[in-house]
Image (cartoon, rainbow, N blue to C red):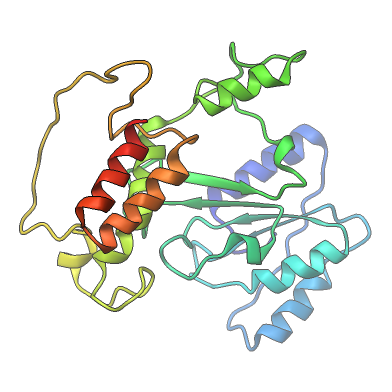
Length: 260
């Protein structure tokens, strides 16, 4: 890791170092950075045959540096080094394509530039390592003899700890976020003041409201605000189309995908 990482994550790795007897090597990045090429060259010199993991920020918290992680990930992969990227400040701030980056693990916060509720975040894993991820709390859903049972609990958000509210919030924020910026600009280049930044749906004024309803209408039909990971892709795709063209047809498609 570099000497520009977030303090809490530095302590996390120090905890791992103590518990598992690993050795952390700090790659000192001096300021100012003269060039990307020189930065990569100096950083790679810290790799050795014993290096197993590269942990690095996409955008650093204390110094706001945008590291050239794509090139470093490529070099690390060639050396069979696992890459773990802290992308807390990236989503909604810069163009982000996780498949193109090709990291082994990537985590990002959504409550910063995407303006979702606090606690909204994600972790992405390459297909090679996705089966290495486990929930922090294991409950009834885990079944060592029958994997299909475990998968059923995962699909229905009943495995470990799942923040249902944050999941739904992120899904609805992604398609609506670009519409909070100045017309014609991307969501990571909004070019506008706080009236747009903090009002992604263009309300005329700040509004507070509470919806009173049963949490679920039945075991077969979910309310619009209860979107599971199983149907999320379809719902959020139709929501994006509805944001672009608020036609009756798109509204019906959105409603059907959400409740059925």
